[in-house]
Image 1 (cartoon, helix red, strand yellow):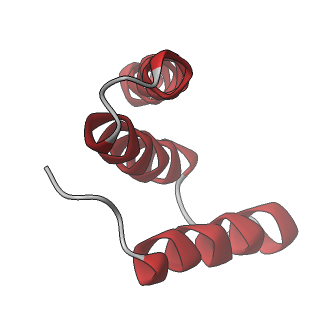
Image 2 (image 1 turned 45 degrees about the vertical axis):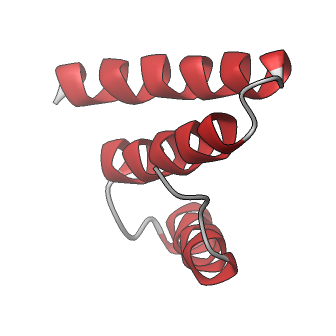
Length: 69
């Protein structure tokens, strides 16, 4: 699992801004992308317990949104 690139993070931030201002996009899809990026960041820093906790919380929320459909 590789670290996210700046362009991947920038694209997510732009899509989140569009969602917040225009309602464009899927909340569940955005949360899945966010969780994926955070998991990749945590995997690249295995000694960072806080990064792992944040990634786990993001994944749990993404899974909730996906289950809610």
